[in-house]
Length: 604
Image 1: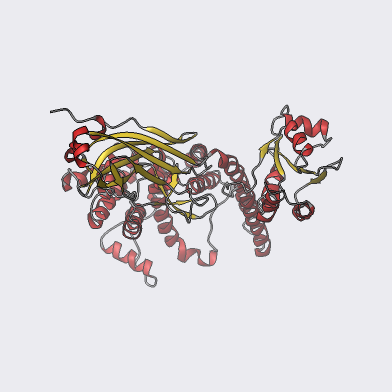
Image 2: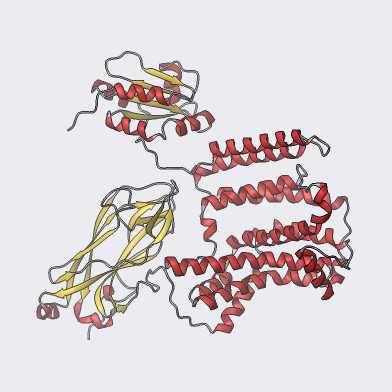
């Protein structure tokens, strides 16, 4: 008996063919003979990175016909319509949610009829062609539409040995298999160890000194709690006092509750995704979001400025006495939540394995496993704060605490830079600029008015800081979007050729370091009406980048057009000797008026 062909054995099929690649993002495809629910067919197995994706629906694809389409044909078989797995949701740079297929997934093309069974049995092998078409995009760019035909062979005589697959299983479904080879007690123990391991992750190191400092600060307080009446918080204190718990132990328990609150949020998100979207929550998914990473980096910048003593968070004296305990508990709760967030991107094998097991279980065991990860992380802090002897041995507060606090500020800045460098290249500069402005606003908030300043002056200064931060965010933090205009790189010959052919030319002189140029892009060239007119009039749009002093665009700006700097835009109209120039940022309506005067491009 002949050994099955490579294409008939899962894992031994044809080599993968690369379908798309953009920088570090890629996607490849390999074909294998397979069965789904005992129906024979072809498994089209996609393997790649999570950011590169294909569109699942024509309604949300960049253009009609650009959704992922797969067809198969052979002389001996009739293939049915391709069966796709559940799609996932992707938020594009414009903020729109679209349905996509990304990363590793499988599409199944079933064999519906066999045309000549006897002939196929005699021949054994049959040639099959699988046509794949669509468009691949990342969060930064869309590649050119593609259409590729991949050949493969199937051995009909070996169909009973073809791998049985399910689109919900390891061959590319969006939900992992619901079975696990690990016993429950082992998996839950692994989850507990994973939580303990989070405390030694480098990503959580910046917050650990803050925790220690808080415990040191609380160690000098009385261990006894006065009985009080009134608020629910005071009732809780009486309850803890009845349990003979000290203030330090209560704060430690509150900090642990903050950690557990984060993991409870993860468990809730897992339930929502599985029940309503048929998706699973992958560990660290939030750090794949540029918005989340940027927000965490900016939060660390604010924390660093706080550590430098630039500003403090105060409560009005009229309520300070009543709120001091409340603030302590809320701060401990928030710090526990922050510690859990910072720990997530630095997980390693044991953590990933525990979380993956949780995702493969029904909702209740999965939620318990996720919470046990949180229990493992919180346990060391609970032990530390429950042993008064350990707190008594901590150093007394003094100048060393202030120096230590300021030193930690620099550590926080290093971690913030590390997070920023993980952002897409197009976002890094804007986040860094905004981080500096945010620190400046915090400095305004904390130092421009003293403790005894009049309320009106305080509000005026702080409203100024808020307005400056909002304005900087509007300039520096917009998500990169797909350009509405098809800009071509500057080339003097292209400009001359277009004018000789009677085609108008619009040149946008810009530079990476030019803040006003960014504003022009937002106020002028992001307008849909202007982009539509440029296309309607057949205008050649040229982007002249003057970021480098010796670039052709820079030399032309100086010597050919005698302009001192950027931004400047020029519209060249055939038959007119001099271009129309606009300097500054407020010229959108003037440009629109000029474009409307141009004749429409001829139909060809």
